[in-house]
Length: 206
Image 1 (cartoon, helix red, strand yellow):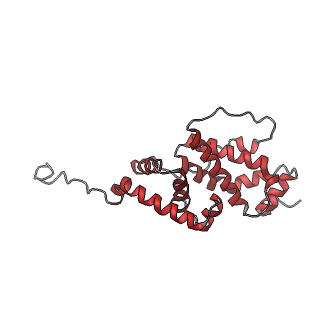
Image 2: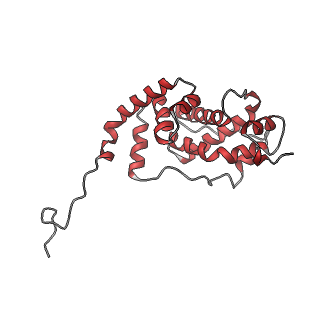
Image 3: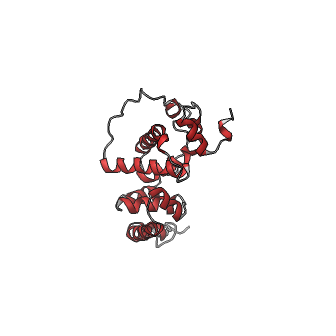
């Protein structure tokens, strides 16, 4: 058997659907960091993002047989994590975890998986301001902006993930940017720090 590390994504997903015990773990290894970046940017909360990512990989694990190959596997996986995030945003609360004893999900729950992917957000005031502003947007605009402006996907890639036309992605991004501007203008033009050493700043001359 070929080493799973050498196989393309579609072959890995096909082998997983046929019962290969190692194929899905390789898919997780390849794509978890990028999918985590999507989840944390959309949800802003590491715990919520981690739960959404677990939901997404569980859905992919169970639904691999439904993959028809019309899109790239990476696009399919990102679509699943976007949907998982959307579900959590819609519910506005964390639901109790559903037992998964019927599936072998060691690849998702082991210590190597937990906490190893870097958190792309920084708990700075600016990052918190950006996320607070994003929360003011309609969900469809927020998802488009996260993919295109924050994560650098091309418009056509975002369109494939969201299953909408490229023109729709562009218009959602444009409307979202316009709505964000009043909330984030202070980040673009920050006030200069006051010179506390000058007489005008209240300091004393030496």
